[in-house]
Amino acid sequence: MELLQRAGTAMEASGDRFDVIVVGAGIMGSCAAYEAAKRGRRVLLLEQFDFLHCLGSSHGESRTIRAAYTKDFYPSMVLESRRLWEAAQSEIGYRVLTDTSHLDIGPAGSSSLQSVLSCCKQQSSLNMRLLDRPALAEMFSGTFRLPEGWIGVGSDVGGVIKPTKAVAMFQALAVRRGAVLKDHTRVTDIKRDEEGRSLRVATAGGSAFSAKKCVVTVGAWMRKLVKEVSGVDLPIRPLHTTACYWKIKQGHEKELSVEGGFPTFDSCGEIHAYGTPSMEFPGLIKINSDGGNPCDPDGRDWTLGASGVLVDAVGSWIEQILPGIVEAEKPVMTQSCMYSMTPDKDFVIDFLGGEFGEDVVVAGGFSGHGFKMGPLVGKILAELAIDGEAAGVEMKHFRIGRFAEEAASSHADS
Ligand SMILES: Cc1cc2nc3c(=O)[nH]c(=O)nc-3n(C[C@H](O)[C@H](O)[C@H](O)COP(=O)(O)OP(=O)(O)OC[C@H]3O[C@@H](n4cnc5c(N)ncnc54)[C@H](O)[C@@H]3O)c2cc1C
Image (tube, rainbow, N blue to C red; front, side, top):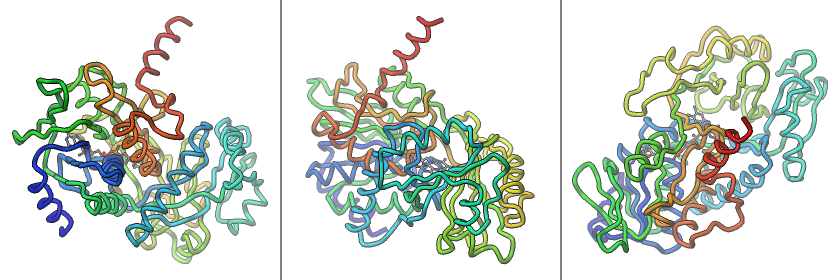
């Protein structure tokens, strides 16, 4: 609250002209505002709802950080982002990230397990290792019961981030660096001013702000806002999903905890199940499948049935892999959230182009795996907005143009 009051005071002092306006105060926008303010720019961060609301994608109690990826450009990005998480924690003086190990499990022939192994072998700091059933049983004291023919891939780099606390941390750091934060301010339009030299950002309340550069990080609202503002139709699909917490059977609480050595995990059998050690709610553990149903972010059906999450399938997974350890009948607590999916599940981070050229930068479509990357994405966005290029990251995987190129090549192939 004190921070927001300070932010309000700064707002009056700085008027309506900024170097960079960031639209959307989830993890990406909050990190981008911090990084741009750290570079000495006058920054305004605008949010349509309350700060730290639960209506987007960056709220709740846990997000996994893992470097085990099936595409080879992500592990080094995770390691760089992790370094930035540590730096932010040092600057603020408290922690939002708890280190754990990470475990992938699945059938030995699974292409995604094999891809994880081959993509991560370049990064020796991950200490990736193949675990057969006896090795896995020894490492986790028999907690995971793998079916015949399954294997594990262990890594030293895992962890749990507290998302709401992490967003608050970056907002506090941004304010400390002089950024102005304003909630209950929905952006309705972005235009060039009459001379074409700066951008005019209009809001639903009738106010307007101007800036040299604008960064748009509006999560599940990305397709709607970008289309309204520029006519560009980004293939980003919002999905409504639900995080599920399950009751741990009495006497097993310790072995599923961070202190007991329990890892963050992904399982790639018939369903993709994933989870984090028991931390946020004593006696409960988060285990999800990564499904979701298409939704309008402004008109969601909040029921569990509408979330597309395969609750029964997760229950069966629990009975098979953690038998006698977790109650598999039904989750005892749930929390709704939204994914923003791209067709290839890679992010969109690019200049908007067209009449906006390099003055508007967009970042969305984080496809259910973006939170861990927040600090790095924030740095990339600040660099794109201020320097016109991002240092040390191959941006071709995240360009808007790839969708049209892919569509054209699949058309040519058919
Ligand atoms: C259940 C679940 C589990 C996940 N687990 C993981 C995980 O383990 N690891 C991981 O790395 N990632 C995970 N993710 C993904 C991660 O949480 C998201 O990629 C990330 O939070 C996206 O952040 P964002 O800032 O893009 O979007 P958001 O957090 O939604 O932020 C966008 C903000 O923009 C605001 N906004 C929208 N329109 C406007 C407007 N017109 N004007 C002003 N403000 C506007 C919204 O209100 C919102 O606050 C998970 C996601 C879900 C749903």
